Length: 461
Image (cartoon, rainbow, N blue to C red; front, side):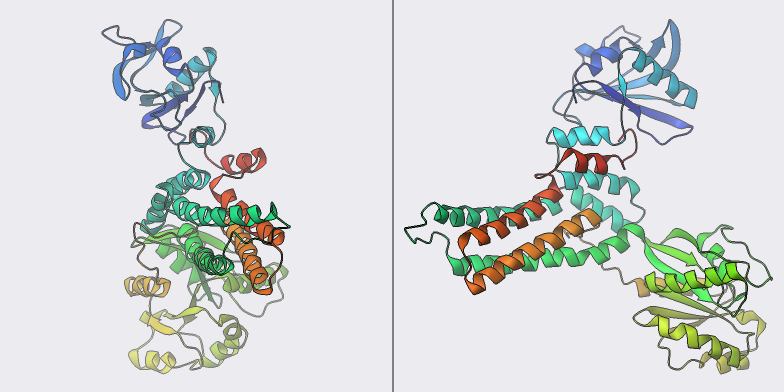
């Protein structure tokens, strides 16, 4: 953590500009060996948060005209002395500047190393550091708002509050252990019981929010199912606005699952095109149909596409294997190829499968009829609540697992108080609850845990 690191912090590839970031004591001095301003002014003499124009010169050759921003410790992202070089977006220029820095003894940063240094220097806790990655990856208004709230410390603040309350009581409980023969009680058991109930409710609420948080972060899973040639792949391509799936009149074209995510009015949906369901002897197609049923189980919303030109008897026969899989799913029944049938025949088929409680919509995926109505129905089915600036929503699986363990521990405290177990066991369970809460924010951490978390970040962040 004492050496100078550098990396390209903008996305890989060519663009209008690119940003190369340095961090560590001596970053300004190193950059000064390459930077030449028109006035001859050095970076070392400039004020913090100042931008200077000049050139990067390496081996007596001008690499590029750049803007250099100077940050001084502790007022930088990492809490260290830092420099950001904004150059033209040529991949060649980016590589040459990084090569020049490495030649001056600077080391190439590892994935997430800038954020790890920020965490190590106390700029924010571990949950806030992870929120940086979530913010970069946010693809909807809801995911952006949740990540921003977590990065500002909303989640960490709530955990710190719970942990402090437990700490006050465990100190009193452990004080009793120092006077085993005095039979004194420093910690009021009734108040401790009331506290455990309060903390149990708070942790349970946070853990339950993960279901919503996971949907916000990864997109609402929507399975598109139906018989072969019902128009599933055509609909997927239409929703994604690209030719993602092969469309053909040949039955059984889609044999595997195809997934992609799209943002509709600020909500992310993860659409899953599945293999057409039918009776077949083809081994590969049968495996694809098995995966279709698996994806139905994983989906929150199911779009069941029915080809209106298919006889009712065949639809009802197919329903015998599909309907039992749709329990607890929000189902939209899409009658496709509506442009091929007169109104009278449409009405006749609209009332099939009366046992299925589902919204019904006539569409033509090929001619893009009523797909705007379908999008509105999807938003209604998603039922994503409005996320406020101060709402705490758990989106990270690591946080969820720690909350579940903390919840188990606080429930043991509560049960122990009910049956009157000794103070040392109560103290142990309180400390275990505090341990798991501290694990989320990084108050309790190991190099292995930190390495695993930050290795998933991009280089330059």
